[in-house]
Image (cartoon, rainbow, N blue to C red; front, side, top):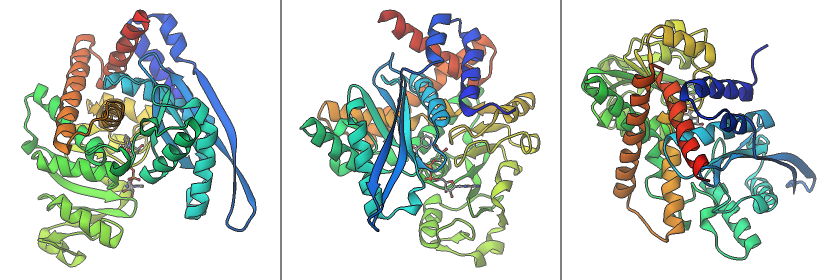
Length: 425
Ligand code: NAD
């Protein structure tokens, strides 16, 4: 039988525990959760009927600081999923060295079946029930799958009413007008590029020598593609759920493709010459259309899965031609896929390091709220770059010292940091 997501996460932790030499008592603690909060969320539909959905908040561990992690609204949300994701948040927050523990939560619901009014009513009731468990120094949620700044703003509003004072720092990922941070939108994608550049520096390689294919053109994929191109990598392919474009000589400006996607709703057919992006330019630019699943097996140097989990697996990992995988999505490589890539000597920059720029900037947002500060986008991105480089260098050094993969090194780095804080408590 295939392991559940949580069992897989526990196994990864146990494997890293052996190499990290941290106390078995700490590992025992990290294999369980501090608090498993579940409740019914009842709201009224537009037709007057009642709907009841299941709400979750899993608080995994708070040795490093308040629990921190996103809230997702999805029909597949389950206790197992949020348990696994909250454990991974504890580790991710430790790798990037922010003073947060790990949490995750959400509602088991398909938000696409709800009107705006229903979504708001559901979110506000969820926030009221969640209120006793969260707070700037207790647990700080954020957006995740199908949640966004608007939903965070409703949660701030409900929580502030409950505690009787404005409390913007109770969540991150807020709109800028109510205390969100400059640079948060770009942070995850840009952070991945900073991590990749730091690794290439160790290897003595220059970005100009690498071709890249990016899967996913949402928040993460778009800004990863843009920052990779700006850093000198030759981005040759991008895709979203409807397919993609491949131009072996290099894509034009990613900003033009982003505008094209905003107009057409997909990147397929976005062959841009100047500001004119159209399928009729395909031959002129020497491009070809690619089905969504082909992007990860193209003849490129680096692939960047930035969409979904488990997309690199036993079926396609043997066909991967790239030498580097920059994991921008959460959990894009399953265990079998990971073993195959390792045997092929593919360098995998793991998700808990590569996409941690998002939570690093969430920490910057929380910090600005707590200290009543407002940083410019330049300040935020400078601090982000420093944080990503420091964490990446630490992980790289551990991988060399212990002769382990970057994934194991990232886990070891996280466990050692948590142990240091645990011993001081
Ligand atoms: P998003 O919803 O903005 O974008 C997802 C993109 O994936 C869309 O372009 C969609 O079309 C594309 N996609 C869906 N199915 C696809 C397929 N079969 N092939 C190719 N593309 C496909 O989401 P996002 O915020 O960009 O998140 C992407 C991943 O990064 C998720 O795994 C998320 O958990 C992870 N992540 C996001 C952040 C963040 O700050 N947004 C932080 C850390 C990790």
